[in-house]
Length: 252
Image (cartoon, rainbow, N blue to C red; front, side):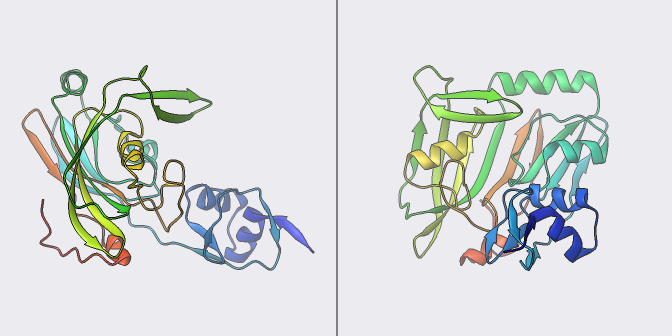
């Protein structure tokens, strides 16, 4: 069998550079035979046919002299958004998480905002699509310990971890999938992903904690409020591909 590295085959098929092909694969946008290609250097048959998922572009929700609120699409890192708009991040979203992302424009406001986060005075609401049927509100209060190494992070529930509370509310059920609202004030690394997995309701597409694959990880930063500001980003249309009927008038 004639094999070659995945990114090289993709580069030839799309007539792009090897680096561009690597970036597409690393962004989680490349599929072969219905499965996401996870490793750019993986050896694959040279006749493999790839499909590349289209992505939305980031858009500005609000801007003033203090901050910039961005509606981040899935598959773009928070750091990339910071580079694009040339302002530092106030917080981060995982690459496959979409929704409200805040950048700060001056040091004085940044200090005030960071204090709000530290003292858990920031209201954050996420929307997630999970596997399984949830019919009742659930409060998950499990401490989280995060281990970071070589630019990666893994979190686990541990008595040695930091306080973490997630309030989960079911919004819609389709088949054996539930659309949920998750309200948090703590913001531990991968908190929502870990807490939902801990109650047997893993986020669809969360390979790390939910052990399942999908087109994307269906987690969306829907609403953030701090220091008198309030920002909302509508739930992306791709959630409806799971069978949910989320209209433009959807509000929580």
